[in-house]
Length: 354
Image 1 (cartoon, rainbow, N blue to C red):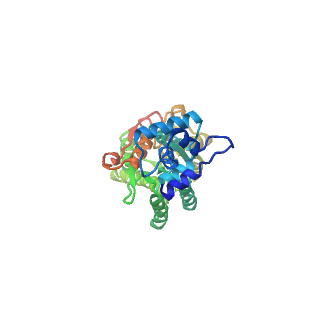
Image 2 (image 1 turned 90 degrees about the vertical axis):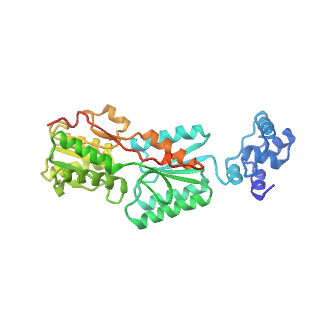
Image 3 (image 1 turned 30 degrees about the horizontal axis):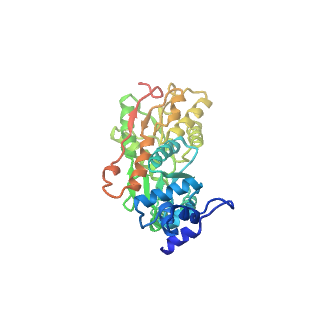
């Protein structure tokens, strides 16, 4: 028995006296303690199928529950997938989480979810705390950072996860150092701008989100660059860099309107920001989709209840989550799993033809 297996074998973690211990299972199955540990806790050394089935049958009969920490010690990782999102209340992240959970179920894995926010310090603390779980995989669904030093610090934490035996996959942007499921954010936003110009819009505001994050920066850049190709330059006062939430969309839209700017159309870099912008428009006595057109990005599920229905760039959010976990767990040939996702422009009632 290796030192790692001894640790797993001697720490059966029985929470209540009288509950079956690993040694009880070994005795019942007629195998050594080391074999029982390898069969139930996992190990770099495998157990013959017949012995494994016998040990598992004894464990079921005795009501033995394997200790998760012991399994992590034996295998180097736990049966946990750690998902890091930007905002746990954002429907964008909840849809991605649903995809990760579905894929994890297929692999008999358990998902834990942590909200890292957008501040680098909080993201770093979240990833560092996850190392203690020894997760099989860490999926990061939050945006990467524009600042190279900040991004390097986050990458360093993720490399430590890998050194401890975990797999890492990122959602949203290409990453040289890690496996990633890229989203063509700038391309999708650019095609949305093309479609809105074709509908007859010429005067735009952009709720651009934080300048420090790659995802909103790419979406805002893609949109404004496409407008410039059509000879349209948004008023600099109408391009607002703020937060990345519904409240931010609301307050940033109020700032635009209160500055005396009344655009034909406003593009928010996320749907939740667009929903907040709609509320602000109504508060100033205007009607979204009539007085000011509104467009977003993501196509979150809750848009089904929004009136008027919101024009957006639709992403297969659940599929993004599923793909990220499959990519993290893949042993090789990850090229197909790394194919970028391109959003689909969906024109709805919030942007009628002019």
